[in-house]
Image 1 (tube, rainbow, N blue to C red):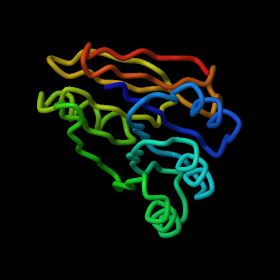
Image 2 (image 1 turned 90 degrees about the vertical axis):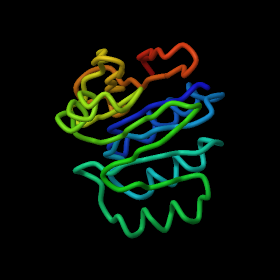
Image 3 (image 1 turned 90 degrees about the horizontal axis):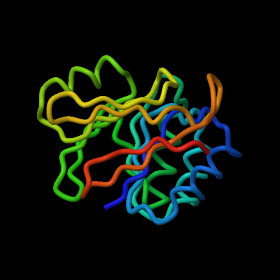
Length: 161
């Protein structure tokens, strides 16, 4: 299974559209927070055919309206601050904050732990857990990026938009 992972869009719709084109063919999309405005969530729902799992970041506003958008879209699950998923037999955790992600990875309970917040694309192996920051869709601190994760290979690739 190929999974797309994104974070920190901050309402940059042009980059989001480019990212959604890039990840066509992925079977699921994980988003690690800071969509910001509800219209960005609507764009994501319309632009990705499969299931989208998202957690909230520190800049996400109008959570009530985002919840309504998610319910109407049918392919969005808005998890709140933390998501624990099982996809293709792998345990996956999503949070926005790096320190929380580091702690979750250190537990050794997950195959993949994803986070955002610091806008720095990177990955590290923590025991059996891959700790992954897909970088930022926004492109504020550098080049806009997202990540692709292959569950069969248990490997991630950071890709530039």
